[in-house]
Length: 178
Image (cartoon, rainbow, N blue to C red; front, side, top):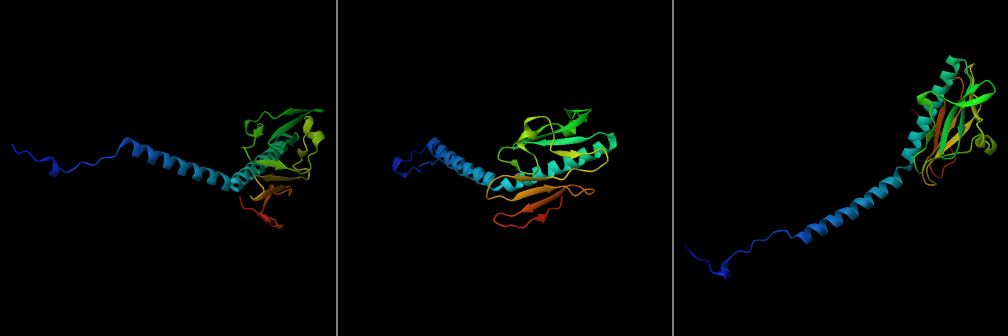
């Protein structure tokens, strides 16, 4: 057996636990920065998705009203909306699972339109789908933040609900293809 003097040994170099932890901390910081920047950038995408969802649900409610011969209405708050059906002189929450009350995702809100504060306080819808197939005139805005695109929903009876988008810092509205 040959003995190698210690001065000629090659030192084995490995990765220490501290080096691994430092790399993990750096990766964690970088990934959290990326997640926060993506969340901030996707406000327009979330608002667009909710505008399409609301328009589709409203169109479905109007078709259901026409087929059932019963008026269905929509009541809107900043962070949520719900569908109601006429039962004689009273309004009841819609029982169809597709038209259940819906809370908007964090950061997305509904604005304006023709829904007054008094209508929001009681179970009286501001937007109506009549049994005849007609829709009361309305305009709703779906927004996420001041630097994101805005989306406007408008009635255009007898066609489906119109969705338009407005780019930040522009005054013109463009029709959105669904």
